[in-house]
Length: 163
Image (cartoon, rainbow, N blue to C red; front, top):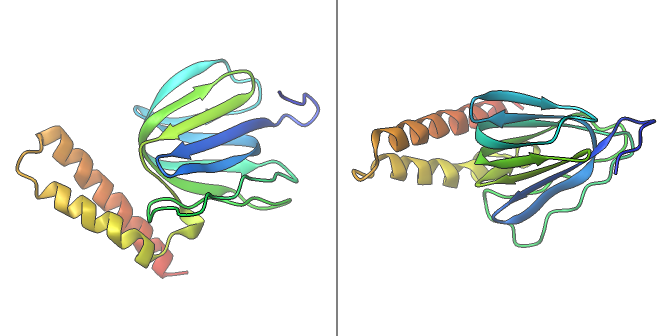
């Protein structure tokens, strides 16, 4: 439950590889299916379909995150948060988010901790997406989604090459 003095709430992020994040936060910004959604302490309860984009998490002072599970896949990777650490970002591709009782639970179809992202780690995702785009059985909607995913992954790779 929430501590009214510090205005924090619990945030969990889960993808098919397991729990990527479990910590106290002061804010979360999600890529909803229809735009960005910001969540603060005492947000109204809701269930939201996620889209493709970046999830921004602002950890609370002294937040401790659940470490990633061993055997993460190339798309996985967890985030470890510490006191005074800056925002943490995740690439999210679909899923849902539940906001209730000062807790946010995000279940993503695919998620990648961007602080763990490197060209070597993202390349298998790019290769898989490129292969999916070439599939003649894809509908135009699916092809558009895969193309958007490919562009997002390429932008992430380019932004990490400069660091």
